[in-house]
Image 1: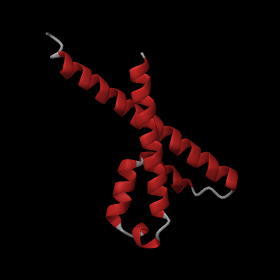
Image 2 (image 1 turned 90 degrees about the vertical axis):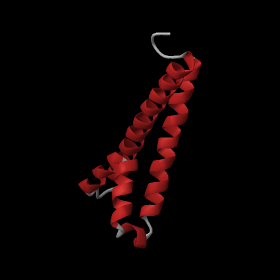
Image 3 (image 1 turned 45 degrees about the vertical axis):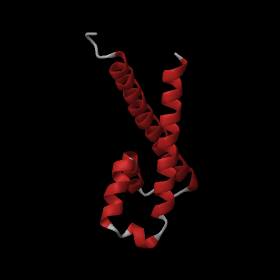
Length: 97
């Protein structure tokens, strides 16, 4: 049971790091106006659309960032578990073998 949890945790951390990098790159004005970067950021951090809520206070900003990071952790963690399951399935020789 430790391996799937490890895959979930590592994949989730990759998702959080991805969100942090996308937010850091989004602070560069030249990238913010690039349409490709906007689509790429929505693909890598889908919950970033919550930023359109236009949070005004620091508390609201922290809440939005927390939600985005948690959602990214879960999305990437679940994808990691799916990859882990696929690897186990292919390594074992398929479901019927």
